[in-house]
Length: 158
Ligand SMILES: [Zn+2]
Ligand SMILES: [Zn+2]
Image (cartoon, rainbow, N blue to C red):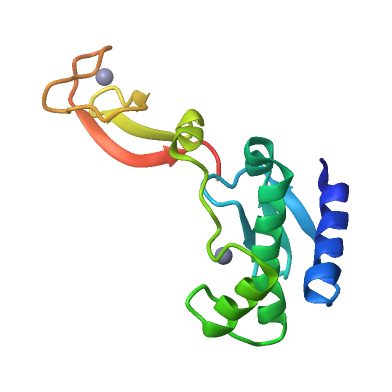
């Protein structure tokens, strides 16, 4: 499935389940990690996690689209569009959408090597990226023996 097919599917679901056209854009976003999709308040567009579709298939995808369309239509109509709002709960229930953007199973998330712990040598400034935490009291720079300093976690994507 590509963006064009996704757009078509979102438009169809919007008409079938909500009876209102979806007039913005729906695209797959490869950078989304733990959520199935998101509705962008500023642009009105919807982004869907491609990985979610690959893992869970079309049935789950339709659930996510319905969920995002709940955000979309409520926000476009200036109603309570957040998960905690009664409007949202009611609409999600009436169209059979999951109330939350269901996260991917933990194992699927972990497979993506995106989070790193980063350490910089205080002497030679070499940057180390490690998937696991490093005890900086025990480990020193492999090049010069300098002390390692924890720097902000860098995400490869997003
Ligand atoms: Zn949501
Ligand atoms: Zn060093």
